[in-house]
Length: 543
Length: 76
Image 1 (cartoon, chains in turn cyan, blue):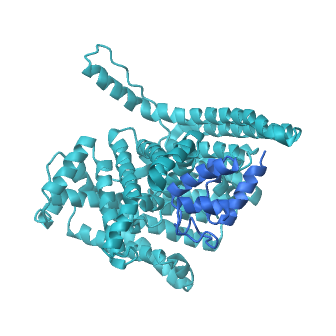
Image 2: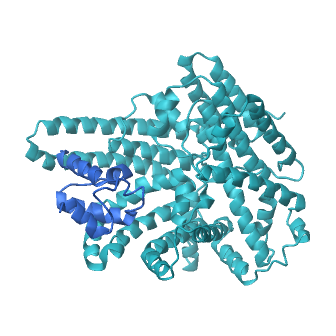
Image 3: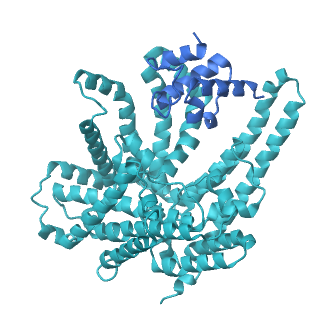
């Protein structure tokens, strides 16, 4: 076995939780060491393992993570000291004078928060986006026939920076809001920032969600171990059997210059949407599963998004931790700002209850979706993806009351089964179109593909012969289809409030192990790996 | 009538505000209604509702809103 991954920064393959180096070496070794040491040492072992994991995948760039943790550690304590000073000073004042004295302290705290945000988001902007910005500036300069062009900087970007930077900002802002106390224990904060199962692809957790649980470590329990393993294996099935098997088809449609007809492009766009969902939600299953083995409950990042009836609902079910971060740290702070509140008040009086708040809401929504698009990567196609969803959600908000009126006149009941199915299918189609632009190599290519999908659509091109030329044969389609039916049934039961995992946990032990081995065997037999398949990196790790 | 209920009725009529305890979770008030409501509450009660207070628990019932308003008025 090639052990070169043990060198600093050479273990990039471990960014996938389903890579043999992670699954058969790093994870078992971590668990054995964690189980072997006394309870008092477990949390330090977990922190050591987390830093070691980051060192394997990012080498010396581990310094970013350590410095980021050190910075928020300092900012948190700084904020708390101002808050303590404020409390003492205000208590000493008569009640009527307190209101006038408070803003100076709030201003001081806001300066600290701003500094922390500039440091983290500013660094992220420089590392991740300066190349993109300079490329565009150079484009304008060339257009203007300028003889001067700017040099494009190249920075080394640690894996997971987009995730842990947002966690760092949320920690500082939460201390500022008084939602949490500043952590005086550097190691606890460091473990919250670096816990290895979530460092590559999230979820983006809040300090209040995991920090205490991580520090109050639990011994590895049999039930946690088996349920955690089940979840990892379920995620692995989604990734290895479905997502990776669809990869050749997706690459053929999106990365080649061949002009396919609309039917194949539609199939490619659906395949990519399925691939992304299976890849990312599969990785999240692994994160939740591995964390559960350590006795940690991770927040869920997906809640069966393809049962959504609207695009807004879809984003409350897909990459939940990112959407919730944008809502709490961008949307509400903008809408709750003094200027926006004044705007809402005056607009309501002039243009009514519905459109009045829509102006401030739309501005905040625009910021959210611009940031959401940009967060995914430094490219116009990602910004377009964000704007596409901004427009869809804005339209939904604008025409909501009109749709209700029309439904009333046509005697359509929004609660009826048929209407709900129509909404679910419509939302899925809109999502697939959005993902087509997300995956396209450029916005222009996205428009080209989207245009062809609608103008040259036909089922005639979808023959098995064409499929095999696209790198996917009948066997692939059957395996993907059967697995998706299985995932759909599990999702449907969960959607109806039936916890499949709890049901399985109530089975006799023999059947539980039979199921686990059956799943493993299924992955071994039908997984897309080995000869003829190129290993696919976790799709969200690149963001 | 209670001033708070008047404000709510003005923003979104046809809701039984006296008895409803899931105004947000039951989708009786939308995020746009909340944006309007906060602006009105600040004017009416001379309070500042920070972003961190915008959570369903504070807006699910008239009682919860009253408690939040009283808390914010007492804050120095």
